Length: 130
Figure 1 (cartoon, helix red, strand yellow):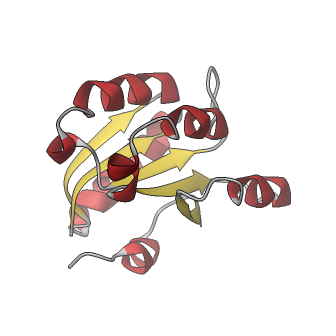
Figure 2 (cartoon, rainbow, N blue to C red; figure 1 turned 180 degrees about the vertical axis):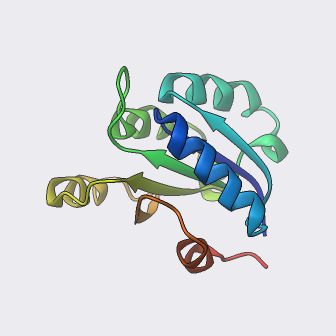
């Protein structure tokens, strides 16, 4: 079980469903949701000095207003290596565009792409810490 999961998605419905599934299937002890990448980055900067508060896994929507998932990743890469090493980034999208998969490969800290919506099977495929 992950200790802390973050869901970053501009869709209220997707955030709600993702949080419910993460809790229902005991995927993470704590779940935090953000409706924008800007808010999520601010939170990460606030907890960066306390590594125990940094998330273990982030579900990151690609297509969001204000800041896309890839723009978030550009800023996320500025965090210290020890923080990035403890956190898995999962790109999370309702589209399965080839261009997104190609761009994803330019970010070595992205661990996987998951097509929305989340499901028990998709969460089980992501389990690495039991």
